[in-house]
Amino acid sequence: MALPPSPPRRPRRLLLLLLLLLLCGASALSLGVLFLAGGAHEALLSRSLPYLLPPSRGRPFSPSSCAPLLPSAEAFLLAPAGDPCALRTPFLLVLVASAPDHAARRQAVRDTWGGVLWAGGRPTRTLFALGVPSEPSQQAALEREAARHGDLLQGRFLDTYANLTLKTLALLGWAATCCPGASFVVKADDDVFLNLPALARHLGALPSPPPPYLGRIHWWVRPNRDPRSRHHLPVPLYPGDAFPPYCSGTAYVLSGEAVPALLGAARHVPLVPLEDVFVGLCARQAGLAPLHLPHMAGSEHFPPDACCYREVLFSVHGVVPAEMVAVWEEVGTHEGACSAWQRALGLVRCKALAWLAA
Ligand SMILES: *[C@@H]1O[C@H](CO)[C@@H](O)[C@H](O)[C@H]1NC(C)=O
Image 1: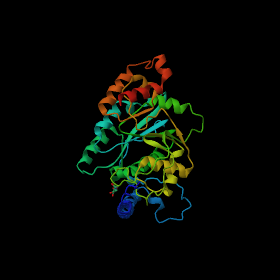
Image 2: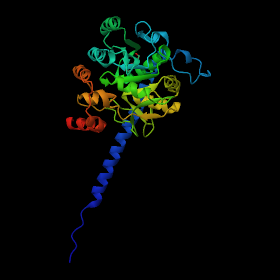
Image 3: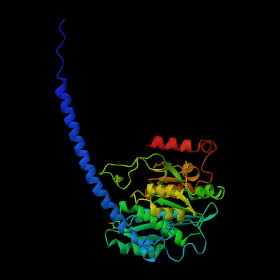
Image 4: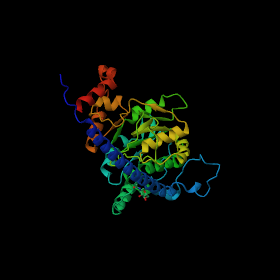
């Protein structure tokens, strides 16, 4: 019996090898480009740091190498009116990261959860942090908004997605300098619905000293190496394989004592342009362990439901202004928002609703 002719394997293998080599060459080239781009990016970020870093400049051997990074007086173009923490030290100081052209989102927050001065029987205060608009004509509108509401904190840096880490450094620096007595500082995005009464009650019931860093924890997240992504992180800026656990930037909580500790650690942490990862890196550097709060939604959206928004969840992400106002009105009119069985199911029911709505 004759054997069938064997297929011409070798040439095909050679072709494959060639293709592989070509691909490797291309990726090596793009890695080189990445390297350069990464360095430029870091330089860009550090150029705006002098606004936040005047004390340490020229004093590299100062014994305060873990002193908090505090903003200078010139670091802010607009600051909250009066002294928001003098009259009554807030239990919860909420700093909402916003953008110059997000006036509608800020107004929705003011008209709803952010407009209250007491939550769960404890004083709270909500302020907005932003940078400099790329369109200079927008500055006048911001100044009018600040004069009217007195709740804007504007840092002297260009308000761009890549500068969010600077925004966080600025708002934490302001909290440490101007509101050092706050029991907790909450950083939230301007499309987040915060359930301040439930959060305040939860935090108020924690043993003392309270956990320093709380939120929805992301575990073992790998850096995004795709240069087209807005979450892209070049290898030279962060060579590691994965980030340490960090709390979702949509909303996280820091104890008052944790804020200066984080700002001290920030001197030794690369300025990665992902603000929540940056805070996680600072927390690890400062030896502060994050605590998982399952009732913080992270980046998940939950459909409007009075029981979930009023009693179960502490934060919900991706809430547009109209929905924010509607759910606030709905929540306000429901005294006992959850029925007995809804309360018993709690988070499971809310997750099921989110899953059904997705
Ligand atoms: C960050 O802000 C600084 C200071 O305004 C600015 O020079 C820089 O271009 C901004 N960086 C990015 C990446 O937008």
